[in-house]
Length: 354
Image 1 (tube, rainbow, N blue to C red):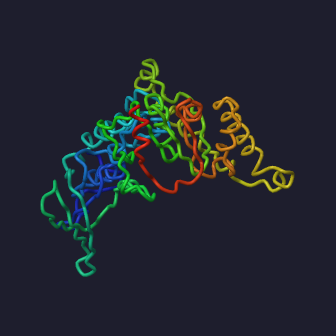
Image 2 (image 1 turned 180 degrees about the horizontal axis):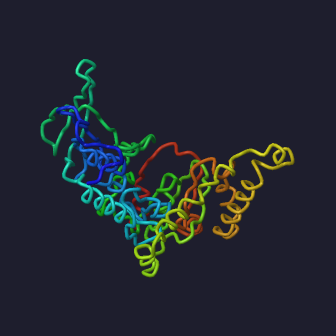
């Protein structure tokens, strides 16, 4: 495997030197690829039985990337034949598997291995990790460097609502979704309207008896061109066969974010004249409000709850997956009051069986 310019594999490693990587998601695999290129010994500890990180653990309905697939490629592994402009979970995970195998990382991964502790020895300048493999007795591993690549969302947060522990219905965190979950014909509550909640509502609402959506904070949820569309065979051919076309496509995929900073620079004169931020930001706000209005069929009861009181782009924007339109369905209700407690009453059960 070719090394970076100026790097000599000889005499670059102390004897017995090793690196431990915790997590086989995007970051862990990227680190493994670079260490393999440098000839540095490493082991990746992954507590699941497959690679992918967030793209392994999240399998909820309609889960996919919310930026163009081309922007999800590593710089060292280009021209992957994505089938959709916004790749689905299974395809992103397959891409990571492809990279790990192609670049010699896969054989360094220990699956079903959870790292439960890491202690640094100031004298020896080494780390001692406690690792439990496949529910066996814990073992210790010594490494010179530890790379924490487990991500921010590796462990689901328990629902912090009174009565959740005694609730006799089913509580499912989206990171714990599996094929056995059946919501067809049932009464479902979706708590949250971030990217995950927005992605899954449409699919769930199309099959559930009723869906109650609990929204704490309104989001700026916007349309995205070609979201959910397949990439044509003609375009696939251009990516693979026409010189530099892939590079142009990659540039365009990220171009829209190049001048986002301009949306956030306050124009003092504009504000003094009655504006909120600047001309471009306020124009975006008007466009998004109009989009909300159109999606909910001018229903003022929904518009009042859905329009944020902060400017666009001051929080991470969310891509619309028919979320607004789904709120207008007869079996969907939007609730914006705080959740005080969770209960399951016998009367509710009788109504469901009726």
